[in-house]
Image 1 (cartoon, rainbow, N blue to C red):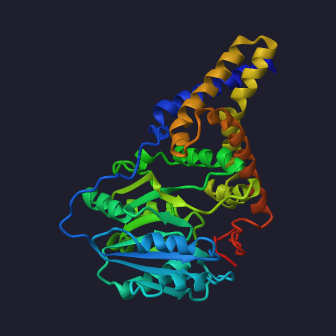
Image 2 (image 1 turned 120 degrees about the vertical axis):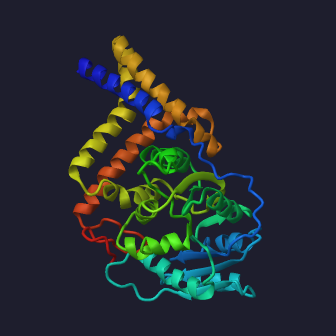
Image 3 (image 1 turned 60 degrees about the vertical axis):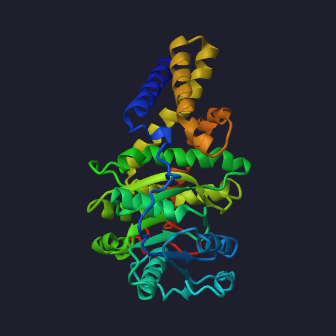
Length: 390
């Protein structure tokens, strides 16, 4: 057992050295939405589409942040109420009162073969085109996302300067409670590790990803990719759409503290539900991929502290040193993400705990898939095969 643990600790250290050196510097978290912008001669019109299902707590703030953007071009906003039962439509309508550039519509009945959010987006995009056929860009965002006053300008500027077809920002998630502080930065860190942002932003590489809470797209590129209908049955729709867009032109994905989610995660159960909804789908519902993911997460995150403590207790210098080296390296790597969330450096010590919990969430995602509960979200269930909601 001691020899096995030592070998696993060595494997963990080697794994972290590879991630640190050869995984696109994902851990630097340095792909940030620029603060400064160029002085464009003209700023193109932007259509904003916000799908909303039971978002009464956040829709007013999200809408106000877009309504009050400091943007020198025209912004037209369409809120799509997706069969909400909590008064979302009424709140959005009140917030839009007196604003001719804001419309609130109801999504049409959900057809077979579509996820609810994508159908709402499709309805919104059709209305946006009717209202502003001249809009060069569309901004797809969520009803819990609050944008800083210059975000639209900075998104459009980045798209224009780099001739990018998609510019996406991973929102700064709500991170106030105890469980949020443990799990939210780790979630962002893992996402960057899965989709290294520098690789996504490199037009010569095939990696593609986006964050659905904030996606600015050239309307022409979206049309060329087949619109959201091209990914209508995909549970992880943002990354699927990013892949379709990148096949035709460059994209960009980054971070910004000025794009914030105001949706709180009320304890471990909320984060667990969010991850378990899509984790097995991310693994392409493959049991072999699941086994590999569990083994890799266990070696990378669980083994280092276990080997460090066991090695010190048993006098095994190899286990202790290898485990401590891997643990220290993961603490170093997560620091930029912790700083993004305003957390002290010592929180990195707890990354193995978060890693262990996310491993269990991934296993639970597979269990839910087996029970026909894959993709349950806001009262809708995404079928295990086909990805459509029922």
